[in-house]
Image (tube, rainbow, N blue to C red):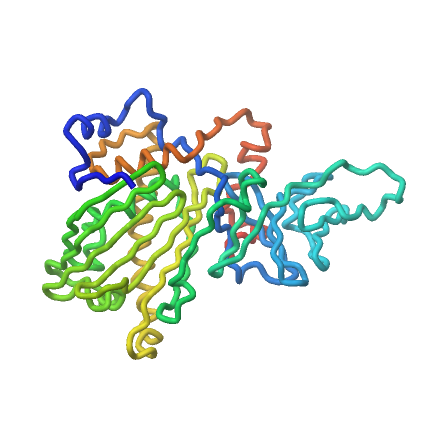
Amino acid sequence: MAGTSAGGGNDTERSRRSTPHSADLLDLRRVGAHPDHWYPVALSRRVRRGRVYATAFAGERIALYRGESGVVHALEDRCAHRQVPLSMGVVEGETLRCCYHAWVYRGDGRISRIPYLSKGDGRPPRGVRGYAVREAYGLVFVFPGDPEKAAEAAFPELPAHGSPKYRTMTFSRTVRCHYSFMHENLLDMNHQFLHRGVVGKLHPELLGHRSDGRTVEARYLFTHTGGKRNRSAGLLAGEGIGGAATSDVMTIRTQYPYQTLDLVPQDADHPSFRLWAAYVPEDVEQRTCRTYGLLMIEKPGIPAALHVAWPFIRRFTERVFAEDRMAVEAEQRAWDEQGEDRNHEVFPVILDVREVLRANGVPLRPRTGPCDPAACDDAFPDPTSAHPRDRRHP
């Protein structure tokens, strides 16, 4: 990986990269997540045996269902016949039957049976798209890109998740912003003033960062300098963050398209907690994303201590996340109002991650017209709708 100093290069390079309206750069908020990766689209426990669960990736509606064998299948969420959502259908064995005319689909999307046709009657040449599916870490992943690349595409490796030394807390929340704002938020730890009511006064010092074509990594030294902080912050850091005269090293990495965070307390040789996160765009314009997070917390010497602290840690992390969400959604609203990215960014880490996200993403296609079902919000309701049939995020 090519290294860069904490200063981010020479003055000429910094000047070039901090120019907000460079004519040769596509606005990052108009860059979509590249589909040729494995993305989580549901919590495994939400996809129950014999039931259908509706989800989405960047405007592509996906129907997940768990067959009698326990295997999860993913199909394009429309019947090839009348376009009625298959997520309204019925699971029968390993097949999915449309609720309207009872057309039956196999797990690969092929039509298995049209009940009212005789054996010699003509049938559609194909059914609907079937997606490659993998279950891991309590999540259901799909591969929305080129099906031929699914087998060779890198899958997230999280050894701490299955380790007896760690216990995992899972998060799944909708955030109304472009996924790039989430990458920037976690990588730029200079925003601790936002969390002053939770963690007190924290001083983050950038120890250094490095980047290449797919990855940006930043290392910070955190020191608590005063103020009241939530007890759970100390619990998460093994009594590191928030303790008097202590420092902790936090390493954050965007390795496209995922993000990780490791915190190593002072005098420790391994992380007290590790975070893995993915930001999955839901709508076609990718202004709303579903955040999936796996927070792997080291078990203390007394196992019962973590059990007792668990609800307090969750409350703490939810509060921090709520404050971050408030900020990134405000950034998205500003972009919507201004119609462009007017940020005057100066922090080298963020300048680098923007380059990585832009280089690895795909340009978003503009709307093609009000009647295009691939790009029309009237044809595809808001993915955060509270409609009783919208069962994606109960």
